[in-house]
Image 1 (tube, rainbow, N blue to C red):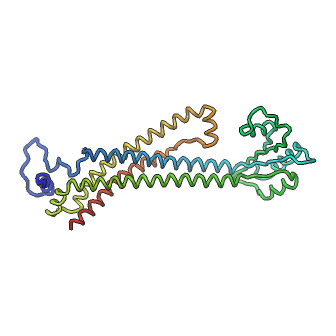
Image 2: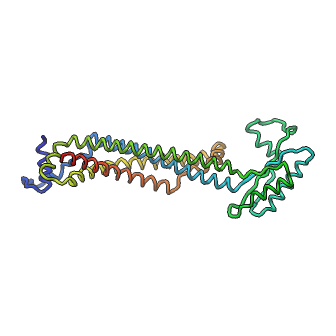
Image 3: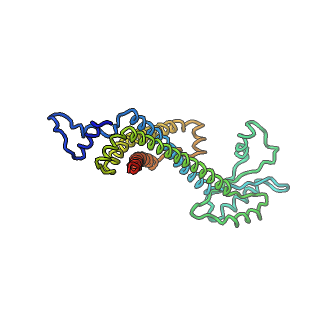
Length: 325
C-alpha cells in the first residue's frame, strides 16, 4: 500500500505532519491525486479533442443543411412556373402572351417572364446535348413567375383562369418539390444529430473508462482517505477537478481545430466559387458558409464537453465510494 502518498493526503486534510523546510514544496500540496501529465491523461486529452472535433463538424453540418434548406424553400416558395404545351389548332405565341397577361394582372404576382424558344431549348441541352435541331419537336414553353411572399395570390383561382383561357397551360407552384426538399433536409439533419449523439456517447464512455482506470490506479490511496474519514465530496472533487482540466484542454484543442478547419474550408469555397463549377454549386446548394452562430455553437459544445468530463468523473467516483460502504 502506498502509505507515503496516502499520508500526504491525510496531512492535506489537516492531520499533523512534519514541518516542511524553507524553500521546499509541500508534498501534500504538490502531488495531485490524479496526475494530469500521465500517459493516460494525455491519451484522454487526445480522445476528447478528436471527439469534440468530430462533434463540432457534425453540428456544423446540421446547421449548414438547415440554413440551406430554409433558403431553398424560401426561394422555391416565391417562384412558380407555367408550362404551355403545343396544342392542335392553337398558336403557341398567342397562348404564351395570354397566359402571361393573366399572370401579370393577378394580385400577388410580381413578374411573369416568357422563356424564348432558344432559352427553352437550352433547358433541354443538359439531357439531350448541344447542337440538336429541336424545331420539329412539339416542345413546351415555360413562363417563370415571381410571387410576392407577403401577398400570395389565390392559386386555385389562378389555375382556373389559366385553364379557361389556355387549356394547354399547367401551373406549378413547386409545392411538391418544396415538401420533398424539406423532408430530405430534415432527414440529413436527423442523421447528423444521430452521429452527434453517438460521438458524445463515445466520448462519455472514454471518460468513464479513464475515470475507472484512475480510481483503480489510486485505489489504495482512495481507500485510506475513505477509512480515515475523508468526505466523499472531497475525494470526488479531486477527481472532478483533474478530469475537468483534462476535458477543458481536449475540448479547446478539438473545438479550435474545428473552427480553423471550417474557416479554411470557407476560404477555399470563396476561391472556388469564382469558377463555373463553383457557381453551379452555389446555385444548387446555397452559400455553404457557417455564420457567427455556428462558431458560438462550437464554443458552447467545447464547454459542454469539458463539463461533461468533470461531471461524469464525479459521478463515477461517488458510485465507487458508495461501494466501499
